[in-house]
Length: 163
Image (cartoon, rainbow, N blue to C red; front, side, top):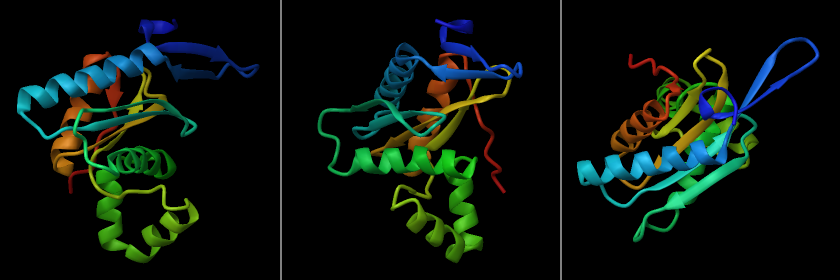
């Protein structure tokens, strides 16, 4: 385990530090999402955690999660990584520039879901380490439990513009 137990630090020859999310941290994020969803009495959720390269580290679905929630959760997280912003901000951009977001979705082979629930994960130094996508309840609830879960494991969620 690396610093704070959340991943492995890798140093390049130029002194730049790359941090990855550990599987254990991803499990803790998913467990925290599920606990908060139960506390709030949300509908069954699916959680997908991606590393900073967009690879699935963990996917978990609640019993009775609707079909398609894996693809939606992954698309929320993947879109956040591709745009470098939370999926709520992508939704707001889609409202202003629908042609651009539609073109980006096509370029990403449909792996972009521009609604709240995809949240970027930063380490304590502000370096991007991945993203979590949640799907199954309202998009606002999906986003809320994702942000809560990231904080419970000692990482930071990227701020959303909330214009």
